[in-house]
Image (cartoon, rainbow, N blue to C red; front, side, top):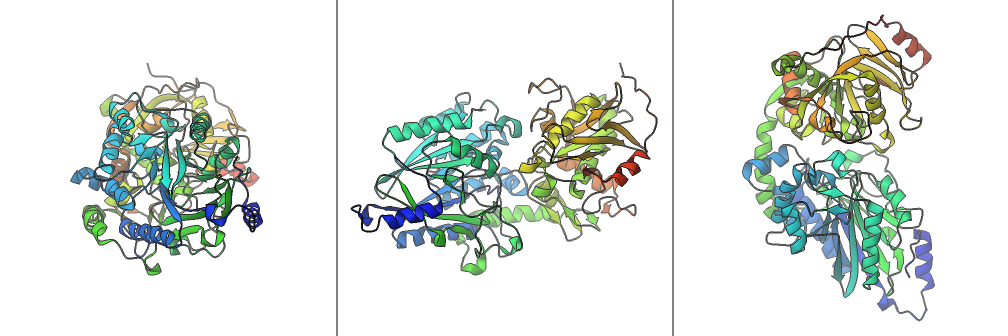
Length: 599
C-alpha cells in the first residue's frame, strides 16, 4: 500500500527509516522535470525565455540529476502550441516548429491540452506525426475518446497516443496517467474527439496500472486551473505525485530565483503545493519561462518517502544563470521563426498614447482597455458590413469578446500597435458574427455566465461594448449580475437587482463564431442544451476587425480627448458600485419604447 504524506510527514518518515532493516540502497530517487503551456513561445525576450535556451536548461538539469545518482522524467502537462504569429510561421513554412521543439526537449510523456485541438483533430494528428518523426514524443490522456477520428485512432494503434504509460527508469516501473479537461468541446475544437469524466477515467487507469504491479503513479493533467487538481486529487486513490497544467500558476518558495519580469509577483502557492490528502502537486508558469524540478524519494514498495525541498523549485529560463542557447535549435527554429515574425512586427497599424493591456489575468477578470478596443471593433465591423449580408442592425447593438480569445498577455508599451502584436493578441482566426434579436433575458444569462467562474480566471469572462454592467463576485455563481445598462446616446437600464425590468426587448449581439457555438458555458437558446444558434458569420476575423477599427474608425491613433480606452477601462464593468455610482447611472435613464420585431 502507498501512503501520500505532507512534506513534514514525509521527512519524518524518511528519518524513521534510519537504522531500519530496509536498506538505503532500496530507495529510489527520482527527479521530475516538467513544464506546461509553452504555447508556441519559441522566441526569447531579451535574457528571458526562448526555446534554444530552454533546451540547454533541460539538458543541464537532466545531467545534474544523473550526476547525483537520480533518475529523471521529463513531462509536459499540455498546450505546447498556440495560434499566433509564431504558429503562423509554421503554416507559412510548412514546418511544425513546435514539434521540432518537443523533440529537442526529449519528453517522456506529453499530455494533451485544450489548445492542442484549436485547429481541429486533423492538425493535431499531423502534429503528433511530426513530433514522432525521428524520435518518440508519446502523448497521453485517459479521458479522451479518439475512435471517431481515423488519424488519431492510428496514433492509438501505433502507441504514440495512449491513456497512460509505464516508463522504466533505473529498473523501476513508473506509471504516468494523463487527463484533459472535460470542458474540451466548450473551449476548443476537438471535432469528433469526445472528453469523458476525468475522475472516472483516471481512477480506472490507475487501477489497471496498480493491478499490473506498478507501484509509483504520477498524474499529469491539463484541467485549466490548479484549483481543479486540488479538488480532484483527494477523490482519487493511488496518486503519488500530480503535475498540473492549463492555469499558468506560478508556484515558488521564499528565496527561489524568479524571472525579472516576475519581480514582485505573488506566487499562487508553494512548490510543491499539497492537496488535502497529502499529495504534492506542481505546475509552472508557461511560455518556456520555467522548468519545474521536483526531487523525490520512494522506498522499494513504492511509498513516497520524501520531497527534497532544497532542490525542488521552478528553475528560471534566464541567460545570466549560465544558460547558452543550443545553436542547433537557434538555427532550425528560432532563426526562421524570428524572420517571419519580424515582418509582422514592422507593420504598424496604429499609435497609442496609452499602455494597452491584454494581460491574461486581467482580460479574464475585469474590464481592460484592450478588451474594450476589441469589443468595439466587433461592433464597428458589424455596422460596416451587416447590410451587405442581409442583417438590419437595430438601435441597440452590443458586443461581447470572450477573455479566453485574447491571448499571449500582449501589453503595448512602446506607443505603436503592430500587425504582429494584433495577431498575437487575437490569434485564433475567429469570425465576427451577428446574432440578431437576442432577448434581453438571454443577454442577462450570457452576462451571468461571463462572471460565473471569474475566481478561476476563466476564459468565459466578457469584455463588452454597447453596455455597462455591475456584478457581485462574492454572490452565488449564476446570481452575480446586479444591473445592466445599454450604453448608447443615453443609458437605458434593462436589469435591476438581477432581474430584467423591460418587457419584450431585444438587442443585436456581435461577437465571434466560437462564442456563438455555445462554448465557454454560453447558452444562446436558453434551453440548457449545447446546440448552438442561428447567426450570420461575416468574412472578417476578429484580428482583422481590430486592425481595421484602429486604422479607420480611430484614424490610426488611440488617444481620444474624451479619454476613451484609458488604462483600467471606462466603467463598462464594475464590481458592486457605491450608492453614488448607482445614482449617477440612474440619472441617465430614459423612457423605453417597446421595439417591434422585424418580420
